[in-house]
Image (cartoon, rainbow, N blue to C red; front, side, top):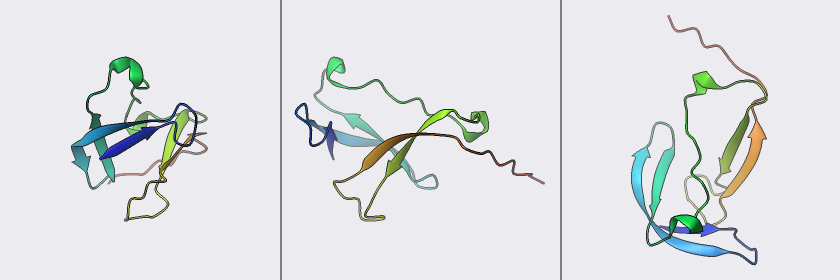
Length: 90
């Protein structure tokens, strides 16, 4: 798996990564970047449970424009929580 940081910019860098873990139910994968110095990489994102979210809290949205066919143009956008839903579990 290839990882590109700052795609299309002057400081673009690419790294080789491996899939460390997959949660298919959540459509989530964790990648481990190989052969990179810690200083070369951004700080890891904190991943938490939805029940701990608060209105206006900053979140990151990862978009895959090709759906099930993962393409090279994955986008990452900063956003915020705009509403919360309380699912009653019975």
